[in-house]
Image 1 (cartoon, rainbow, N blue to C red):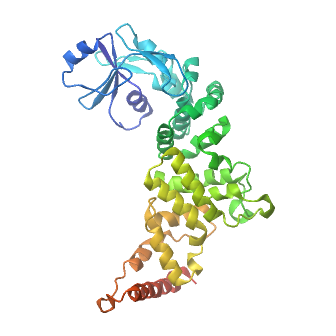
Image 2 (spheres, rainbow, N blue to C red):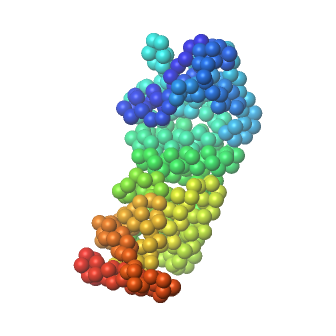
Image 3 (tube, helix red, strand yellow):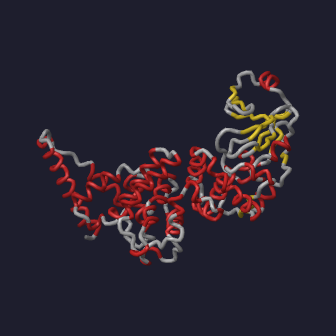
Length: 398
């Protein structure tokens, strides 16, 4: 029995990235009984083939696969002592993910040139077997987001385009997992631009696809942007925080523009409210978690109104700030950062005022006004509105 460290742990070490998550291993030349004799407390977690957890690490038996049906799970798997390490590595997606290390000798086994591709900053598939799993389109797009200085090989891009007809067979949870990971990566815009360039965007992200070719809006805020999709990608670049929920909100804020009647362009009247239903549809389709869903819906519904905070009636502004306080992408401060980035820096940055807005919302109702029913709420709103007006005169110049 031989055990090798494989995959991300080696790739990340060669890239100089910090260790992340549990180590993955491949077990070669052993039966399950032999493995369990060495790791008696191991817990089997693999259903289709032997995968065990032991000591906080994962051990998967070397396997070869044969395509038997559509989608990510349409494979017949063989995992027995006859499967070699090279056979196991060959079934992986990219060369940089197909490097192994002998735990005894510390030797690196790299039959597909992964180290050279890391040196040359290149994302490259291993073999034509890449085309057997449609999930690889999303995985490679996610690695492109993780490694923005890596070039995606043209031949690999071509194989990715060929996977588009099978994308519909993927589970929405698996698609969202790759998307969520991409949103947390260094360059999330690469994930979505690659989906556009491969023709994959309409399959799981039709609301984003509708932004391709759609005029973004008046030139003052959209100078140099080719379309509304490009605007969303530029906004992702400008955000000051890597919070994936804030990035998802940026992705969703202008979805309503995809429904605009061409007759009213370059304006997009009502796109804020129209976009909320599109965010909900996207979140339902991909089974997006509630915090991301809420971030996207708040971004779509309120970004136009919130941009007018400096000139808004005080009571209305306080009511809006209470809603923005719930924003999962950083609360009021996160929402204001989104607005400033959305304006390409052409409107005042209100983000530094976020603590003052929070202070205003924390103003308590004096005890003598308690238990007055709806009147209590009105009095509290008036007190907070007065404080907002004072702040406006002092800090917002209006």
